Length: 493
Image (cartoon, rainbow, N blue to C red):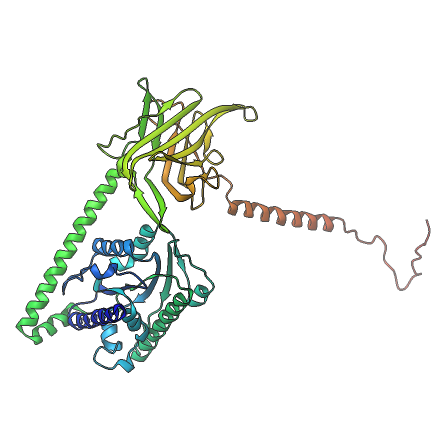
C-alpha cells in the first residue's frame, strides 16, 4: 500500500507538473527557469506548498524551499546544473502531448514517479537558480565537488557526511531542433546513470535539476500580439501575471536593499571586550561564529554571531579572568542546540621565549561546556602571536584546514565543529579599546612562492655550471700545416 501510495503521489506530481508547464508555456518565460527536486527516501517535500500559477519563485523563497527540504531529507545532494533551460524545452521535447515514446526525459520522469517525495517549481527567477550552488553550499556547510558519472562510480559516499555533487550539463545553441533534443536526451541519460550508481551504492540522496539561465528569449512585442489574438481573457491573465512579476521584483529589490543595509550594519559591529578593574584586557571579534554537533549521523548547526556581536547586543562574560600570565574569555549562552547551559571558552597564556628573546601568547584551548560536559580543542600549535600583538586569521576551524584539534581521540570535541570567520583575538596588553597590530596566520612564503624560488634556484645553478664549463674551454695554440713538417707531440714529459 505504501508503494502504491508513493506511485500515485508521484504520478499526481508529474501530472500537475505537466499541467503547469502547459499553463506557463503561454506566458513570458524569458527570465525564469524550472527547478525539480526529489529524494530517494523521506516525505518532507510532500508538505511543501507548490506556488500558485503565475507566481515566480525568488531568491529568498527558493532558499526557504531548500532549507525546509534539506531539514528532513538526505544531505547527499546531487545537483544537475544545465547551462540553459526553459519550460518550452519540456513542452517541445518532453512528450507533454501524449508522445511518450518521443520524450527526451524518460529517466527524469521515472525518477520523479519513483520518488517518495518530490517538488516541481515551474518558474524560478534565473538569478535564484544561478545562486542555487551557493545556497546549497551554505546549508550543507561543504564545498561543491564537480563530477561526471565515471568519477561518481569510483567515489564512496557516506550517508552521515553531507556532500554536494555537481554535474554540469550542456545545452545546444544551434538552430537545429534535432540537435537540441539530442543534447537534452544525452543529459537525461547522465541523470539516469547517476541514479543507477546511487541506487547500487545504497546511499540516500536529494537531487536537484535546474539551469543557470533560461534557454528561450521571447520578445515582449510578440507576447503582446499573442495576448491580443487570444482575446480578452488571455489578455487579462497576461496582465495579472505581469503585475504579479512586477510585485515579485519589487519585493526582491526591497529584500536586497534590506540585506545590504543589514550587511553594512553587521560589518562594523564592535568586538567583545572583557574589562578587569575598569581596564580592557581581552578582545574578540569574528565576522561569523558557528558551532555544530553530530547527532544521528547529521550535523546540526547553530550561528552564535547575532548572540555575540551587533548593535545592542551585550554578551554575558561571567567567569572570564585575566592577569599577567593567563587570561580566559567565557561567552555564556542559553538553549543552544538543545543544551540549556552553553559556554564557549577561550583560554590563553603568555610566557618569555629565550630563542626569540620576547614574550609570546598562545591560544591554549577553545572549550565548549554544555550541561556539565566539556569538549576541548587544542590551539596552541597554530594560534600564537607576540604578546603585544593581536592574532588574526581568515578561517579558524577544526574540520576544514583545521587549526583547532581535539585534545584526545576520545574527547567529546570529536562530535563538535567550531568555525570562526575573519577571527581576531587579543588576550594581553589591550589599550584604548582597540586591537594592537595583528599577526596574521597567513605565512609570507606560500607553497607557490617556495616552488618558484626553488625552480629559479635550480635554473640558476644549471646556468652557472654551463657558464663555468664554457669558460674552461681553450683553443689550440699550434695548428698542423699540410705543406710543412708534421707536428710531433711527445708522449712523455
